[in-house]
Length: 342
Ligand code: KG4
Ligand code: ZN
Image 1 (cartoon, rainbow, N blue to C red):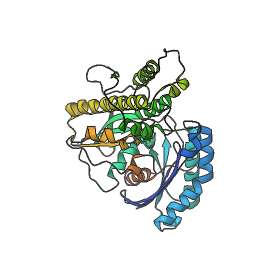
Image 2: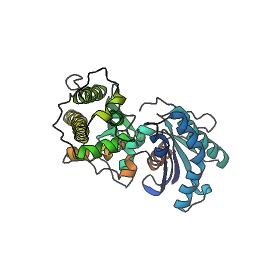
Image 3: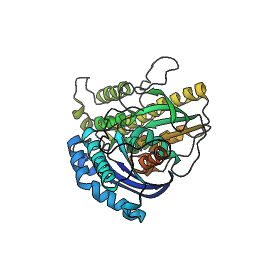
Image 4: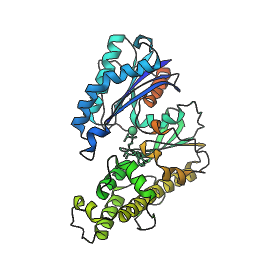
């Protein structure tokens, strides 16, 4: 079964062709990083307009690279949420229109669920119960799968997602967008013990997360290091920090964020004894996170970097699964859901 996946939930326009749920025939991602870099973050309106411009060329390129004609696909899968409404609409209207014209079945995919499926794209067979940690720019959650389509959410963030915290800390420190990779790079040259930053206390055994307190603690530490008080606006901070102070703050923040994620995974393992564990989403590309998590029994190999960040291969993989287990949706009433939860 050959599925065309379409992904436009945020700032990547992506299309992929996947065979039988795990064989990637093509995987094309047009990133908008350069467009948003000048603003220090994703501008929703700019993102939507860029999706309009590149959506069809990206789909053409995915079909080209897969060496197939569009008539040869068996179905179309599109991420319908969560995400930015303008961005979601472009991918969904495109997928709907193609499904209607080509008379192909259309499957709607939850973007966060798809990050878990990225771990199975190389044919890996997870054992259940499976613990999945998704760490991205929009989501931080722990989910227990008792089967491929049966799961319960064990915990999620009360405020910022961990990737969002990386992005905001980058801004406080004056590091370039996108924040995750630049904080990680600065952290390599810093001392992770230089600053003692707080771990949130959400109650004994809680598997929920919170990162906004940590982000504020970095701001306060940066203000104090710069010799200023808490009223100093964050945009004044970067020019007052030395490179070493910036690197030390980045390293201390990263180590604390990673410790928070690690400690929650350990609590979940103790409570649910999963047989397999997967970690997905953009922050799964983080080296310090990988080092801290290494050695956890049952941890499946990470997806390659290009499958950790947003892509359409993971959307097509879930689409293949839906195609075997559920009915397609009508292209005429397919919806988007910006705040879709799992
Ligand atoms: O999964 P993703 O591509 O998009 C969302 O669904 O949000 O994740 C993007 C997030 C951004 O916040 C980015 O800063 C973060 O992943 N990220 C990283 C790294 N690479 C990307 N965070 C920490 N370390 C990295 N190496
Ligand atoms: Zn994502």
